Image 1: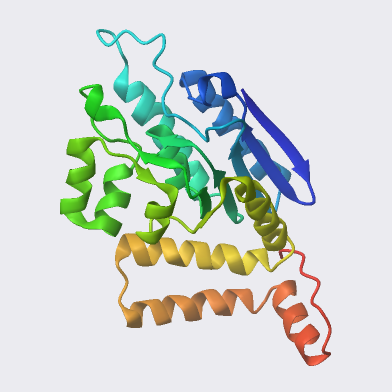
Image 2: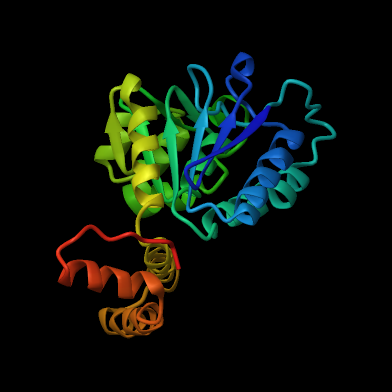
Length: 256
């Protein structure tokens, strides 16, 4: 159910089970983790994640799950959390194009992606209020940080799903677009990033994560930026960028 395609230094990872709205069971999460590992091994300079059909990902596939014997920690701690860590730490810019249902685990996949373009009509959140379960896949962290406690608990208690347009306006994701434009926009963004100074992009990606997770002050951020810039100053892309600017020509970056 997971397809992996390569073109122009980009790995396109496709959730390809439209008949079940790309819901993911244990095997699906394992396949997805392998796809990211393979893409990293291939040395791609960008990743595009998308879902085939009308939905991005409707969450966990519970069609065959017996709640009396359900291995919740095996699914969430053993499979989903390591996958999200792998996605978030991927050593290249990552992009997602999301339409339709982006629920539960589907929401988690978007949280772990650098740049997320969503259809204005997408449905984002968790249907767990109707299942006697709670919002998972990192939703509490994202919603509380961006929406505050009151709006987060309103969504949890009511089970209301946010539209893509509402989610983007609230600062949850990168950009909202008409549904028929999302895939092309995300693909174009991935191709553009892959042709850019990806070593510098990854340095910014790691710095943003530090600012978020360690709550760096302005002065700590300035010091971290200096250290990162010093390391980048020894790369071929840094020298190429300066040379191209001075010679008034387009730069040719190689990601190193």
